[in-house]
Length: 610
Image (cartoon, rainbow, N blue to C red; front, side, top):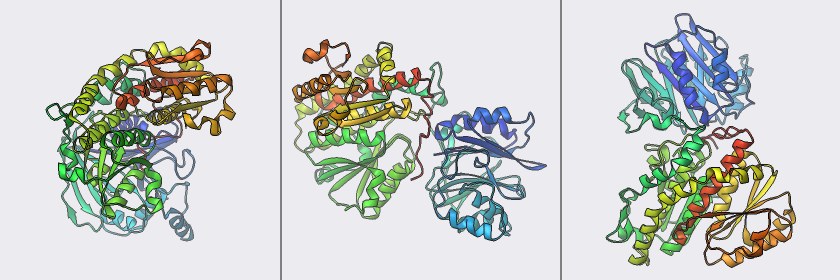
């Protein structure tokens, strides 16, 4: 969950590295650093804090045309200057930036200490710098390979050495790395965001690959130094998509992009003739689809919660058992992999480590797994048997908004296709297609109310703790709403099924603990309204996210009850419209509290470590 950038060419490296790091701060912002090679050797500057703090501390001249940089999200050791990357060897000849975790770092640190090597940091990364420096091999490539032969764990690495001033050696094992191709200059990064201003021609390293990057080009090879072929490809992407533009934050920008991104994921995938969805990327024909007896969805964080929405959709429309599980727990319980089960891995980045490892466990045991991911060419996309690209465009803010919406729509398309080869009628297929087509405009209607919701969000921000409740389709919505609120406003927010209120949570309901209740106009509306009365009877303030026409009874007359109406869709599709105001409430609350909504504390965008 850190950012790597590298440059080799004819320009001064430091400004390019700082620009790249600024674009990677969503991947780590506890500390930052750069290391450059020049005629006088290796120079390193690093410090705890943001990239702007590093930039302000750099001397006016920091020359060098080869360099690497890093934004860190702390794992081993707190965010201090000493623990920031690059990590260097004792002689100051080797610099290393690293994403991932070295599992045997403690043993390697003990070994180095026993051999008299002084350790200057708490990090696992420092051992790699010392191992490379102590190698006596003839080439940098051989020295790095020898060091990695001693290392166990995950890594995306970029390494420079003062004795080899024309190159960067990079390596990947479980943490993304790509190489950008320029005109007599080359780039390295862990995320395309760092490169799009300079090039969109990139090569993605595979796990187990290394590469040597010079101004003239790059070569790839395995750890045993046997050559591999990793072609570069031109990506069709607008560099402006990575700019915040006129918005105050990326989260604000990305929320407002949801109507357009929703149209993108639906485009060309709705089949009016047969009332179904076109999902050729799944690699499943009608006969194989009918053989699916169960669906298991795997994701982490918001991807897990939208996976619960998706599982409910699939079960309701396709009438096959479906459930969602946290990918971070899945492989550790030695799961039974059923050949009749379709596994669905959900990840915005396509690099989420826990989800990727779950995919690999499923495939190792012979299961079929498809992916719902947003990033073309990502690790999960490559590992899966097929999938659905989300087409949400780049999402930079840590809190997912437009990608989450497109995940839901991806699940709706999957459920529609599964249902239509089973018992879902063509009339229901046409009904759902009409509902899907209407969703982008309906999402836009909700987003227009952002200023109207600001005072309510500021009231919620004053509470130290909140409940979010919902039933059946509404419960995953409540879970996602609590997730958004806690991760960017830093208020304690807890989600419960509404039906569970009497089994514990009511003990905490009071005038100081607001409840955000999801009350769609569905078959459970009377039971949901009854629960509102239970909360109100105990003095609990209420925010009710509902549909026009729902009668809340005398509860609606209370001054501490606020109502948010959203447009009604088909009942199966309602959850995503009910989610949008929760995004707005969390955003407005966090802004009111003065938090950086794009970079919440202790979190990062792409979780590439377990």
